[in-house]
Structures are given as structure tokens and as C-alpha cells.
Length: 237
Ligand code: HEM
Image (tube, rainbow, N blue to C red; front, side, top):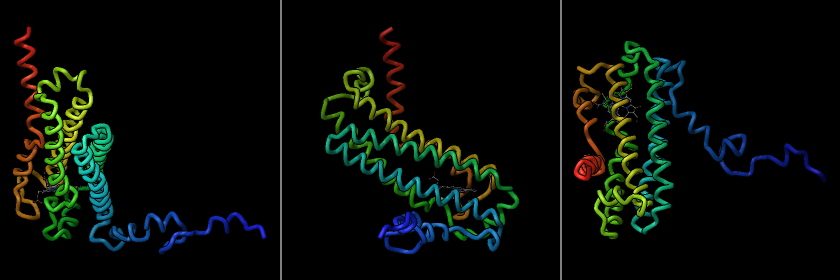
């Protein structure tokens, strides 16, 4: 007997949800994770939670790609690492872009949301915690590869055309560092705009201290080498 088209496309995956789309993506669970605007202390809790939760998802993808990129580099697979590092930086760009949405909240009305956060603080963001964990081994794997070829960081740049993959890696590590830093700066401006620069955060940290973190670099040597290149070019003039 011929089946109708709708029977052909009955869900085949296990789990709750009316369709395989909902079952595979577990949309019931995912969409139950945000406060209902009608019952929340403020309806913008939906906006606030959406930005934070989606940031955590992109950060999770980002750190997984960085972690795997470090492993690939340790095995000498620079091409594979480059592919993943491009993705990781793009994740950070998205997370930075969505900070714009938070500035759609009224600073006064935000205080009603803030009152719901307990001691909740971005310092405890699982995504950023993992980024802090996986970034140093990536730097170590890159430098090990460079040393294996007996190249200084200056050599990687001056002879970049002869060591294309190492050059690309150095640039993607710099990009990763820059993206994390640009997020920090942008986040600081959001904080200043929503709660002010002269207050303390939900865990007692003065916001000014957050401003100080903007100077932090994941790979300071990759920034320092640019100074050296400029000096070197002057000497060769
Ligand atoms: C209205 C929006 C936001 C406000 C007012 C805010 C406020 C703050 C404050 C005051 C701190 C300092 C630590 C503390 O005392 O809590 C902080 C740190 C932090 N926040 Fe936010 N935040 C906002 C949005 C976000 C978003 C969307 C994320 C994304 C995951 C985030 C992640 C972080 C992280 C990772 C830190 C630690 C900073 C670092 O390591 O450089 N925050 N935030």
C-alpha cells in the first residue's frame, strides 16, 4: 500500500517533540531555559538571558575548537588547526556583536533584573573559564612547532613567505587574542553604560578593576614581535 507523504516523514528519532527537528535539537528543553516575560521580575529578563545563554553556546564551540587546534598542532597538523582557529575567532566576533542587544535595556529597569542575580557574576562564566584554560596550551603548541624548525618569532614574520603555515598560525593566534580582548573592551563599555564605572559588581569587584583587565594579553610575545619588526626595519633602512 502506498504511504502518504506525511506518513513518510513521521518522526523517527526517539525523545520528546512532535518532529525530528524538535527531537534532535531538544528544542523543548532549550526553550524552557529562559524566563517567561509574563512571569519574570522584568520582561527584559528574556533579552538578558538570551544574550548570556547564546554567548555560552558560542563560547563552548570556541573553546572546543581551540582545544582541538592545540591537539592537532601537537601532532604537526597545522592546516587542520588553522581551519578550527578561524571558527573560534568567528565565535568571539558573534559573542561581541550580541553585546549590542544589552544596550537596548534601560539602565534603571536593569536594576530589577540585577536584583534577581544573587552572587551571579561573569567571572564564573563556564565558557570564559574554559577559554582561559585552553588558550595557553595553544600558544605552547605553536612555539614548539616554531622551535622544531629553529625559527625565532621574528624569523616567522621576516621569512613568512617561506614558512606560510607558521606565519598563518602566528596571525590566527594573534587574531584569537585580539578577539578576546575586543570582547573584554566592548563588555566593559556595556557594563559602564548599564551599571556605571564607579560601582561594585555582584561579587564585590569594583568595575574599575574590570577596566584594568583590558590590558591582559593571551600571547604578549605575538604583540611584542611587532615592535621588534619595526625596530629591525629601521636598522635595515
Ligand atoms: C548588562 C549586562 C552585563 C553587566 C551589567 C555585566 C557586569 C559585569 C561585572 C560588574 C563584572 C565584574 C565582575 C563582577 O563583579 O560580577 C563582569 C565580569 C564578566 N562578565 Fe559581565 N556583565 C554583563 C554581560 C555579560 C555577558 C553577556 C557576558 C557573556 C558571557 C558576560 C561575561 C562576563 C565575564 C566573562 C566577566 C569576567 C571578565 C573577564 O574575565 O575579563 N557579561 N560583568
